[in-house]
Image (cartoon, rainbow, N blue to C red; front, side, top):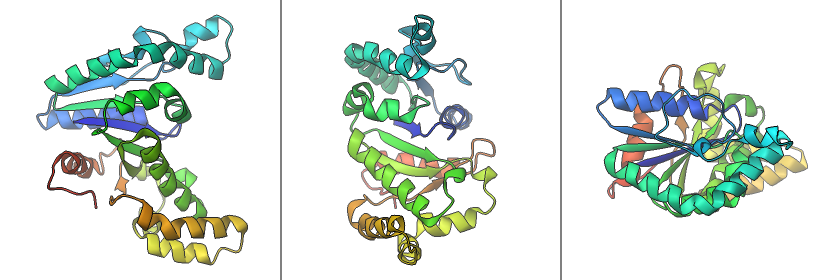
Length: 247
């Protein structure tokens, strides 16, 4: 099984990758780790495949590029090697129960650069987990944005994407957040009361979300407490099982 963790900076991708891997290993599974972040200095897991062996962003910064330019340039360098990385990931998949792929800290690097898109085209059956954290959910329109962004990742990368609220242990009231994330009808009703143009747009978008989005459910995860890990494991199994669905 190939699981790819994607999310905004600070959403906890790397920490979750490491802790979920440990959880799976404790339950008897063999795990391989893939690091696709050229800008990370330290990792809490030992990668079996690491793009930093080819190039790092800080090497390019030493040559005079700024942080953003160095990151983009590093993936320009990696693009010609996409097929090689894909083949190596397949080899890891053959020998391991799970391959956990940790994507760049800057999500847009993976989504909008051809390296990420071309790599995921090699694995149409992979499962993508889109992480977003509680601090971005301040008003009803934020929930619409989070849900739609997961759909956009699915569209951009061509792989099934499951939205996941990370760091749930930091949320003041997870039950309140679940009202909006688990029930699109409830969210749409709340958005209908928003007087702003932004609220109207979100209302129209969320009204058609059930028609556009593939059937799935939102996960609630915490790397610190391991909340939701069993459900994530179940969703991964359902994705790869012909009899399962993600609702």
